[in-house]
Image (cartoon, rainbow, N blue to C red; front, side, top):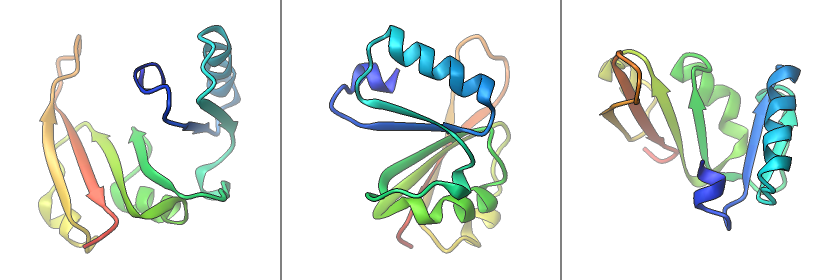
Length: 123
């Protein structure tokens, strides 16, 4: 959806599961999305020439582990956006030493609490 709404924004999608990346590649081809790159691999093994301004995750891991595994990929002024299924404890986020925001979100057709956590690279 982001690629369709923001055609001038480059998106990099990565997953370690080949079945998922095959589906994503097929969707990119059929939708003729020239701004999307799909990579089959592990995020901790990914190396990029230009750091990302934003890294988005849904159901990846604990926040601290996610940041640790992607720290090498994000720009100095970047931010992580993470969807979590339960309320994040503010104390846990404070331990990261970075500024953050937590917002409740509504996911259509889903009867469960979800939260969008934005963590900035700067404290």
